[in-house]
Length: 115
Picture (cartoon, rainbow, N blue to C red):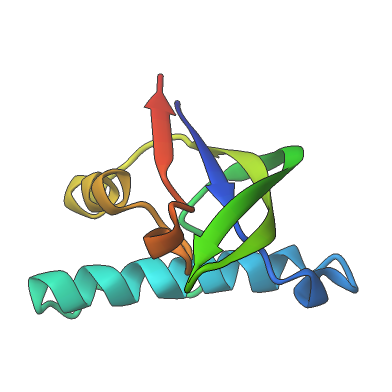
């Protein structure tokens, strides 16, 4: 069992109906798109599978960010994701190295891995 902890920025509007499927689809699509762009590959994950087996919300966090000489408060959240086995080790190693999600350039989506 692999446990992953990350800070993610989440579009709150996607959770109006507690739509976690939408959240996981966005994570999966973004991760596969980054992987394929980096490796010039056509890697895919079966549409019936998620990139994680389970997840749990840890807490909401806020961070101050400076961009273009203005300060913003960004709301994110910390999640724990679980994956029983990582058959596509190269793909998951890539996620550990690059993070996942849509705001990696802001320091979001980094992954701490522990077994």
